[in-house]
Length: 481
Image (tube, rainbow, N blue to C red; front, side, top):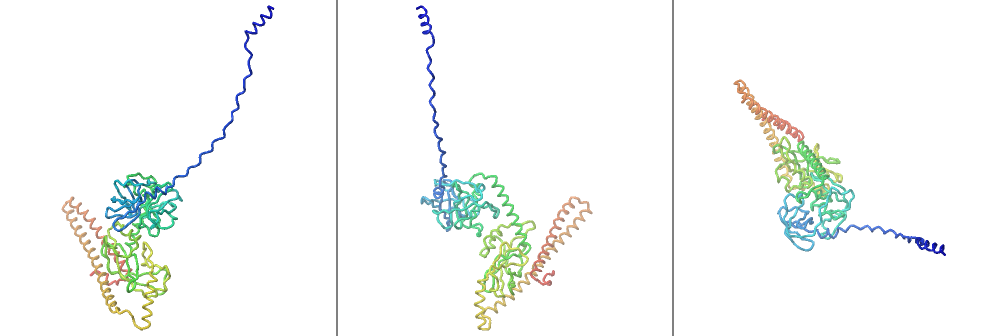
């Protein structure tokens, strides 16, 4: 019994029997969450339409777009300095045009307008082929079109945005796919043959107080350099010879407009016209009777806008001179119907800034009517023939007087310059003989100027003689009298 009791005590003092551990519950992995659906960018059209407006300055109305609650850009210039803006919500507000806007546009200030607007973007950063929203010319502020960005192209010293492949000509704001303003198309296109060119928003940065990308500065500098080279080349071409600008039908042939660079008023000039491609027995000759220069020289003349914009920006280069515009007329002594469609007119040896079309249809209609009547009567149908012959004789006399006067003045300038040089040489020699060194140095400087003036006078005479040779001026008229 003692052994059983001991065994029982030992059993009680031992550890309780352990139960086998339970296995952890199996974890079930949940399926991965689907990726979030890509969110489409917000449609820029409502914001673009709300920011659009119309701007009236004087009697001209154009497109406008707000780029800030109180600031807008307009597609027309405003020389009056203020105009009226009609907002998309129907309000009419008075706007003040700020000076310094790019050509053909306006920057408007409208205090208290609180208008919806689109933020300015960047035309420089647009990729080739980027989608654009544009304002179509004449479609109204509620209509939008689509276009494609095709980079920048220089024109008259400014890079312009090419917004091509639109449904028609543009006029007004251009925004990118994000609804940011990237350009403004003037209502009067900078180049009528390319009515999709827009002024980039970077060109307004100075007036808007915004910085421009570094890429824009490089592109703008390149455009200015190219324009400077083109203008210098045009100046040299006008200096070499007269250039035909337009030829329009007149009562007795063609009314001619030419331009040239000269130091003084050019004389009455005869110009030979060349038809390209050549036409049988068609070799017209014109007379330039009147010359004028100055800010209003081209006023009222039928000069293409793209050519006129280049001519009015010409600045004199070293050597002086100014741009002169001449008007005259030319009789057509051939059958215009023999001239090919699309033929052009030019002065041989010149390099016109733009081709001048031969007005074949208008001249053919006029000559056909006169020719039939003349054949029936057997005589000329123009009762003014005698007056025309008298006028031609007067023109011939004026032509001779003009050339003789031009050569007389050119020779007089040479004689005066030479005499001044000789006088200064004699004074310098006297000062040297009298040991007046300071006076000798002063006279030496004056003598250099006199030599330069004499050289320029001789060059002017040589240029006048070259022009006279092209105009078949008799040698007898060129001699000094």
